[in-house]
Length: 622
Image 1 (spheres, rainbow, N blue to C red):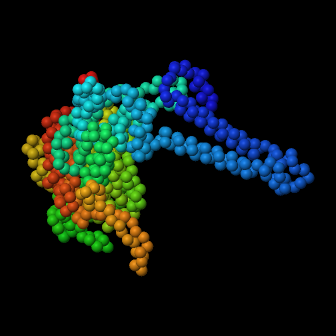
Image 2 (cartoon, rainbow, N blue to C red):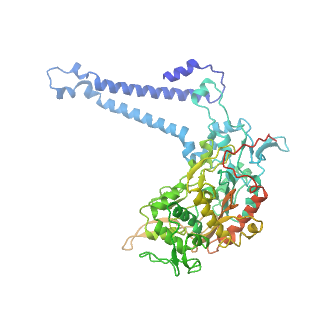
């Protein structure tokens, strides 16, 4: 309370005509009333513990102590005191509920973030002034204002659908537009600031320069045309996000109309609102062998060799692991280099059983993966805002990736590790964003995983040191074997022809998918009758109908150039449908090859490697 009085004594308030002033006064009165209740409760406790009982006034002194306790105010007020405490606790609970929704829900509650656009105060704040402009890393506008034919000032997006998932709209989950310029940016004034008439420094009209390269982003859009999938491209030395795109996308103009928004949201077949790069889970397939090779080097186990012939089958597992040809594609006594080059399922299944769950778990956590010792559901669907290098929590929350995860730890069995070693089994919940981070660790010259960043003027930050400089160089050499004699050689031929050496890893993985009703666009559902052991019906439940055949998705992880990587990327293509196969080397790798050539044409491979603070682009409004 003294603090509140100090505010009014030292303030020189200016006239305020804000419609929020009355609610601000009411909020302050409520807080003061709650503080008064708390003080009264403390006073009653002090009186109860140290004061003289009122029973002494009404009860004769010659009565025993036990009887005196049961007489007078002690007896008559016991029930009233209990009700008083109950009232106080309820009031505190209600206040805590209010504090949560007013202060913390915007950062931690996805549903609140989706619906916050309906808050009139938020809308008044965001519409009270023109937002700042957003530029790409080369100073070209990505979001700006112009006059339409009727003379109205409108927000324009030159790369509308290409950046829709990053920018977001006033509906649904917040994107960069709301994070940079809306209430998520922290621009809402506090109660005492409204009452005192203080002006709050707004971020609404500040310009921002992103790390995105407009040309590279458009090249990704062109390459994914006609496919469902995602591409993420980093600068592995600084963490700059050069391109991030999910297809199918949508137009930001469509979201201005509520009916169009509802239609987009209900399309469960195409899922245009889903950011596949950040928020969708995929089975990693053979790309997950990259985690195994990191773990082996980190634990000085990279010299393990294994003789491959008919396959690998640990005792008690009941299955023999073979390569894709049904036998061994890399036969004989092979090491980690040939095993990775030829993508040997046999070798990496064996290697995982030798590494063990705890070592794999340790490496996974350094890479930002959720590595759990059991399948309790912990971490599944959790967002990772802390992984970003950003100026505000609003930005981190708006583009927070869903945490990729695997089962690995001291309770991992040999049979589980056998599957995880080559990217199947419980190693099945990866995002394209996470897989781009995975290869970025080896592509970094010092073997460090940099925190991804979207604001160009942010200094580079290290998430975790994963490898030593020497280990990273050796692993890059092994990854180069994939593109010059391994599973990615054919697709990388145009890159080699241009004189560019690169590294990579192919991957093909199967995923169970639901059957979509063509009339509604929704997953088909069916009623399942539950029976007890004697065959009697005990209940029923509804479940999604899954396709009889698995969908085959294609991966390619890549970096270039070999000697000083300037880009690292993950390409993910969803298979066209159940039973139709896509392959990493055949379908995803050619896209990566074209993006490498585009990055070279844009001058990324000729520029000096950035390892220090990125400089902001100084570009006037146009």
